[in-house]
Length: 72
View 1 (cartoon, helix red, strand yellow):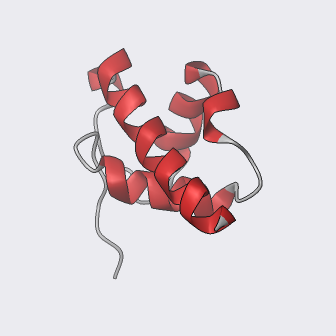
View 2 (cartoon, helix red, strand yellow):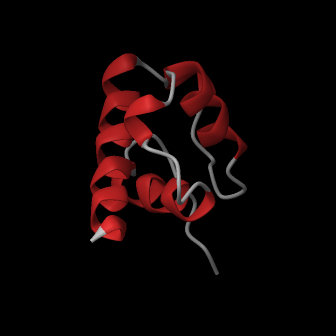
View 3 (tube, one colour):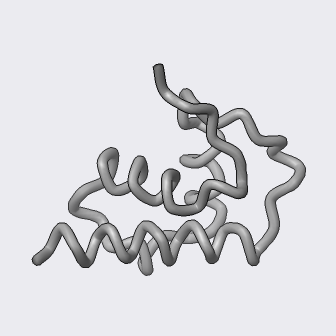
């Protein structure tokens, strides 16, 4: 059973986004798109109103780390 994700789970969300968008450089993604993709994740249970730039940036950086790891 998958865990419920919230805004505090930047690393886990980054992993999920890397799985869903493996060829996309996270640093090219607008925060509006990033936000939409996060709240659309089936396991995301966080309050969409609690989003802010700091949380989105943390998720984007976690995703970028996963992207860099996948590129080798």
